[in-house]
Amino acid sequence: MFDYRNNLKRILQKTAGDDKSLKNGLSAIKAVIAMTGEDDNSNSSIKKTARVENSEIKTSNKELKRLLTSLTKLIESPGDKKAKENAISAIHRLTFEPGVGKNYGVELGKLDQAIQKSATTKDTINSKIFQDAIKAPEPKKRDYRKGRRYTVIRLVSGADLINDNGETVYTVTESQIHSLNLKSGDVVEALEDKSSSVNEAEILRVVGFKKLRNRDFDQIEDFKYAVVQGGPAGYSVSRNIRGEKLKIRGKAVTVFVDPSYYQGENIHLEDGAIVDLAWYTGDVRLKKNPSDAVQIRWIYQLESDKRPGNVKKKKTKSGETAEELAKLDMDLHYQRVGIAIGDNQNEAMLEGIVTRYNGIPIPINAFEGKKKVIENQIKDLDIVILVTAFAAHDSTWNIREFASKYGAKFAVSSSKGYQSFERALYRAEMGMPAYEGNQSLEYKTKS
Image (cartoon, rainbow, N blue to C red; front, side, top):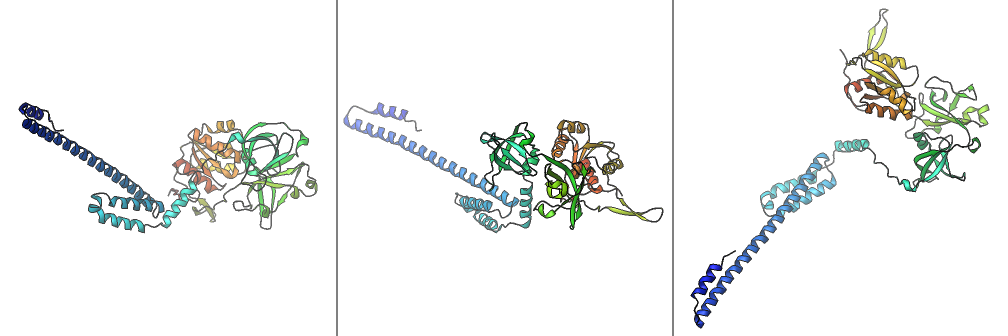
């Protein structure tokens, strides 16, 4: 600010007491005061200009950031509608910024046209489908405060939920019962399933158990992990995957099943399928025709066996040809390999595969439901191979959990085939994906 103090002192010193001198002195003082006012206005104008410039710089930076973000999105997902709109909007705003339009107007115009031509490609669509497929579903929010308590009464398929008066309030699908392994007498908290057209409920959690009298519910027997045999002409069940015979009232029987009752979008009843059977012990049809009384309660989803693709022919001493699988380029160096499988005829073959690659095979009882027992079987292993075709559904999650907990290499063989297990062993040892699925994976063989 202009320092006016010395000027005023000189004016006052030279001002006399006559009228003319006083008038001249007053005029000089006014001139000095005017000078100070102009300086204030000048500073105010400078500050205002600075504020405007800062605001413009902030706006430019914001739009530039939005443009770069949108361009990045367009590179990742060509043709993305929202990204195109944001990028074009940012360009239009930048062209109105002082200096930007003048210096970069042509380049921004070409960029605008290029963005408008951006289109979705087939690869982008496939990538989005893949990402959506592997995306973990968001956990469903549940309000446990609204759940009411009911007692489970098991049915051949599904269950009834009854209140304290013994009245059936809701029904529950087999998928919920199977995943929770519910039995008659279990006390659960449940809510009405409003998305269902029938009187169904969603079970929130299991909270206890109530001992029921035998007369309070119909007794049910089941036969787990039964193997379906036959073809289009007819299917039957007589044994389970452990070779145990299906027995009803102490007699071994063969039950015929109609596949048309059990086919769906994701359900296929075929030769080799693994199912759970159930029936009411008091059903009068069991004596004359058990097939009418026995129902398939659950169908396990299994992948069919794949025929080995890396088979070489060699001649034996007798001149006949024999098939020999090419050996994979792998050496287990005497690592302990847990084979999660039940008691069945394939166990020796799978142990032989492990031995072939210098591993130590150790069977794991995949039908053991107690977590502590499964944990003790896994905690000292180096590798764990889960054969889902021979594993109890309830145990598979525990096996995966403890393999991860104790740092064991883990892979899944989706079928009982030689090659499927061998490849799972290779993936586990080489740090490849646990599941093969439809992926194109390279399995190196020894020359």
